[in-house]
Length: 248
Image 1 (cartoon, helix red, strand yellow):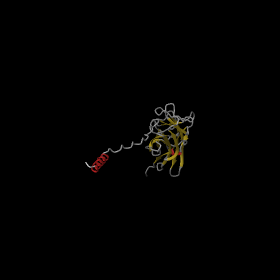
Image 2 (tube, rainbow, N blue to C red):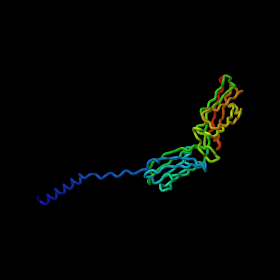
Image 3 (tube, rainbow, N blue to C red):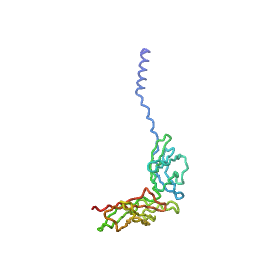
Image 4 (cartoon, rainbow, N blue to C red):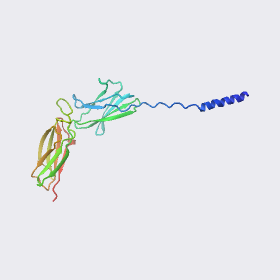
């Protein structure tokens, strides 16, 4: 074979070999941290205006971002490096500010890599003070000048304290005292007919009832209900129970 033909044949073989070569291996997917596990919030017994947040380490995390929101507005941001000291049981801990006794805070813990990629999870820290009463209603008896108002305990009765710090009550066997102020107002002129305060200790299944006599059948009334505990009361959680007038 002539030399020129040999070189051409060799070149074709090499070209074919290159074309048949396997494609390079795909790049490995980035290792992004998953959702932090074991996230827990505990109201501080030493300082009721703070909440301690705990969580377990997340694989591939370079840092953790903790955000606190109140009614959708961000009120706190905390950055915890993965190298931060941990508790004896291996968890991270950060104290966040939760000062408003009436607020329910949303606390979000996000695990991030160096590029900010990651995943998060949220928990809720409830208010120190109680929420509004539930299952409220008002009705008149056969005597239209007589009316009964009834209500059940708030879904959340708040924290025990302030003596001894903020402490969670036993939800199955509550011992916390809820003070309820009931103010009956005639709607037509805003006249206060009656104001009474009662205290329910360990309020659970029983309903609170109050009966009024000597009312005008042709007038509507509203019972303003305010709940409080050792931490006080919250205007945003006041309730109103309407008693309609009797149609003529």
